[in-house]
Amino acid sequence: QVQLVESGGGLVQAGGSLRLSCAASGTTFRINYIGWYRQAPGKQRELVAAISTADGSTNYADFVKGRFTISRDNAKTTVYLQMNSLKPEDTAVYYCNAQVRLPLAAYWGQGTQVTVSS
Image: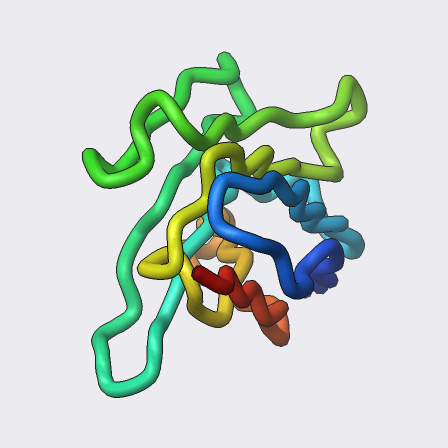
């Protein structure tokens, strides 16, 4: 089992910044990728950014490129999402997701609310 706990959400004005954290525990050696997803009211959950635990390669959705940065700590058990130049349309619940092997599975955190006021 892999457990994911997100933190760092909150209320911020447009143009501001927040940093989200996702702390993984359990059988973390099984994790291939950790990603951040978001879901706004009435919309589908969408990928924001992801990072490989093997080589640190990253992937971003077009709508956050140049504004958000995903990173990990050296132990590869905590992943961060630095969000700059936030816009009201970034308002959503942000979820951490782990893609694991042995066997293949996916785990989700409980989510953290990000609200950007105009």
